Length: 304
Image (cartoon, rainbow, N blue to C red; front, side, top):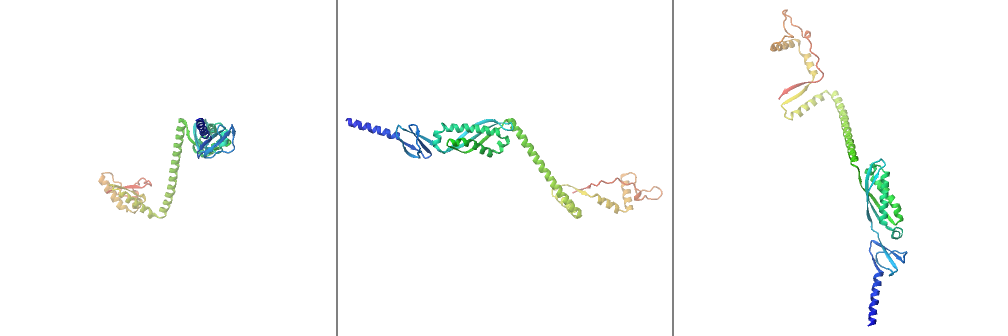
């Protein structure tokens, strides 16, 4: 009976020792063994790991990529603008032995270095760089964090600046600046369009000068375009040169007769073609001349 108790106790002790000496390491972990506080040279890979009970202590190290958000840091840029910048760091362990032996808490250490590096980057950069040239700043921030992290067995995969918070006064100032820039561009585009249009019009004027019939064709095209709108009144430009040509082509007698008829119809004095008792009719050249007609075209109104 005593032997049975001894056997049961031995089995219990054996199971306890077996449980304390067997460890399971997952695929994304590595095991670092300390025997009586001394580092064992070999690291344990994924699977079952056997250690000496009560003598060895196994430290599991996660080898996955870790995402570490950096809290928003207040700083003043090189051009004296107060901003608040936050970022995110992606890192992973490449040497589990250094992580266990060389640094007490590598996650906290990486976070503190990232915050200090971010504040340093803010002070060395201008506001325009923080807003438009983030790729270069991300690379510089990654190098600043990666230098001390390599000594701890950690590799920085990438660093990204997430957001840059600006004061409200600076936002309004930048909005006014952007609006003024858009207004300047619109004016430049309008001026370029007018310049190109004036050049084309000058070329068209030269062509019409060399070919007078082109002006008449253009006039007829304008009439067709206006008539297509179903207007009741059509205004056509009448060249002054044609009036002067008709005036020169009209005989003096016909001009005097027309003037007498017009004066009799209106009841006013006769200016030309009126008998003064001597039986002579003043010539058309002796009549008072009218004021010169301006060079602009005289419109002729025609009802349709």
